[in-house]
Amino acid sequence: MDDSKHYLNSAFRENLIEHLLVGELLKRSWQRGDCSIETSRPEVDRSGYDLIAECNGHVRHIQLKASYRGSSTATQKVNLSLAEKPSGCVVWVYFDPDSLELGPFLYFGGGPGKKLPDLESFRTAKHVKANAQGVKTERPNHRVVNKGQFTPIESIEDLWHQLFGDA
Image 1 (cartoon, one colour):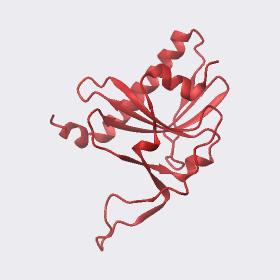
Image 2 (cartoon, one colour; image 1 turned 90 degrees about the horizontal axis):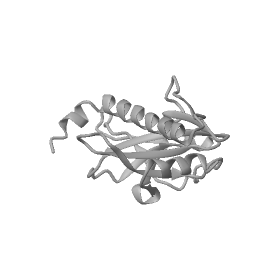
Image 3 (cartoon, helix red, strand yellow; image 1 turned 45 degrees about the vertical axis):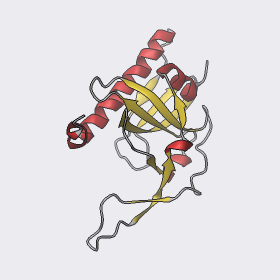
């Protein structure tokens, strides 16, 4: 697979995957017959989340990560500020690199109304790019979470349940 389109247009792709996921959540709300989900995006990326979704009395601050199926990515960086939100979580979206079909998903967080697991014990993240001295400095407000710490979720229906429960 020529993945140059994915890394050369990564910001475009991340925005597209976010919109596709929001569309799937809206569609799920429609199919449930309640049309009750509300979504919004922060103007500033300061607290580690990309999306706010509210449904069934639960407000979720969601940090989104995306990888194409078959990607070798084994970790994700999580902002410590996300743990301060009452129901923060990370949704790692896998997608088909050609069709952009979403799924499966990986989930890191608690159930509806529950906080993130404590992040302090995780390794401190480093910047991707080195400074002028060639050193990749630490990012003290970010922790590295291994893929194995995430819960596998197969479908959008199961992701809905993880985010908002049954009601």
